[in-house]
Length: 199
Image (cartoon, rainbow, N blue to C red):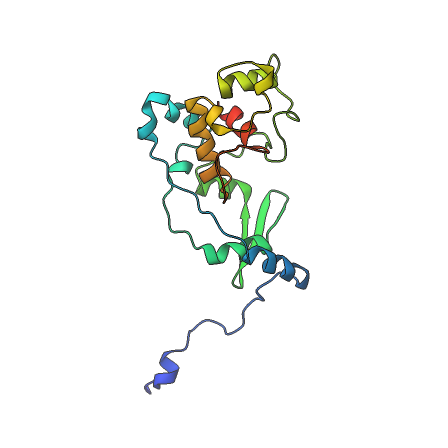
């Protein structure tokens, strides 16, 4: 058997053909926009640090206890590719990262992240659009978030005016569930609703 040359040794045994970086030419502009944004990676939560708040029970009841404790490397340079090519239909998540196609069911995605597939879509709503369970209202949410059913607090966005437990949950939402950059002093959009649902 003849020996391979030095140049041949460096060659991969895989096919030289690769998928394009983008699923279509229309999404390339999306990559330009996303690649200029800062990626805020989630932070690991040490649940035992909050035993006095019964935080573990709340996270466990919402199938989040293992999710918020995930501590894995984050490859921020790949995130724009994933979201550029992302599509979701028929409960399947499809994308492409550096030419590699991703096709995973919602159930499998949830299993990998120790999440539940059940629940309510709260990400496009806020406390005032939400259909509350019977007997509850925005004032009930204010009581849970602020410890006070004062109607004037319903539209409060300052996290420092929340109860201690609600403040901790707001930080978990900021760092793990809806990672964001910028200031963390105000909870806007769907964040108060997510905290309410956790409580």
